[in-house]
Length: 398
Ligand code: NDP
Image 1 (cartoon, rainbow, N blue to C red):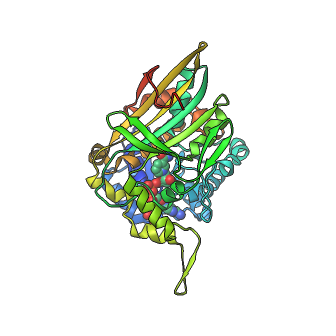
Image 2 (cartoon, rainbow, N blue to C red; image 1 turned 30 degrees about the vertical axis):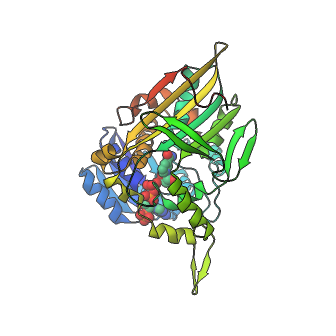
């Protein structure tokens, strides 16, 4: 029996709390976040004596350490914002608690994400005998597990990887983001980047093409830089090319371009009548909370990996994916599919650690861990996956 602390009470925190509460491995669950009302609302929905709540500003390491020492959790699941990754890793180090997150660190005043800051904790986590699992949502997360599973069972060498991410859902809002607007818009407005024997940078959203998604059909998909590319290229040394594609509607892109053109996606403070305002933070305050989109959301997400390489000297093609239905996830836990597809893998990652399957001192990306027990739990916890071997790939020619 294990104790878990979940930091962050947004859309993803809600899913993680529901899924942890349903598992017998977890005897006590503490939901801790900046706004305690949001923790209490989640606890009320779950309605279990296992679930407790606490107010926590995770940017204050001393307070977090105190909370960890009082509650004595076996693992901390960080589903606050990427800005909190390092402070929470520091607190876990000090209190001797295993750590897991779903997105890599970003400095608040610079739109830049990379693993270097978190990889630097490797020696300290090893010496302390504790485990950190980085990027254990869907993408990053399941996409890395899918790739590790493909390598373990179907390939001698992986050469080409195309991760494809489609949200074919409709929430009825003219413009909204599916997870934290600030983090989401920072990600999309960055330059595109992919690996083709070396890193290649292109202007934002400048490369796009129609890609077929199961049960959905063709959708225009845009090449983005996504954080799992960095760790997968590092850990799978035979990769010649690795890319990430995400769908956006024309209306979404037009809105984004207008917001960018008028300066509302800027992250530097602007003086407004004597008050310093960060335009992107102000925009976040105007946009719908991602969790509020859940109630009327219809349609599906589809995320998967198209992989090509060599097995027994012959070329092999492999596609593995999950489709997830917004209305079904809302009915089950009161969250939309983007939060659900992030929260379920975070819960499974935590189960891997507390069940000692991924428990090893140090800092790891998911593809460095055994994919089999994780893949076994994906379906039962709500994200069934499907695979296609040696069928036509949309990325065969380029
Ligand atoms: P939300 O914005 O809905 O929730 C974030 C939560 O973190 C809020 O409850 C917020 O509190 C809390 N928080 C923020 N700052 C602090 C702080 N200093 N101390 C304590 N709590 C804090 O985001 P989501 O739930 O949509 O996303 C959560 C995480 O999941 C993000 O890091 C996101 O990048 C990641 N993600 C990963 C994906 C993947 O596939 N890997 C996909 C989607 C998301 P308050 O309510 O007070 O603001």
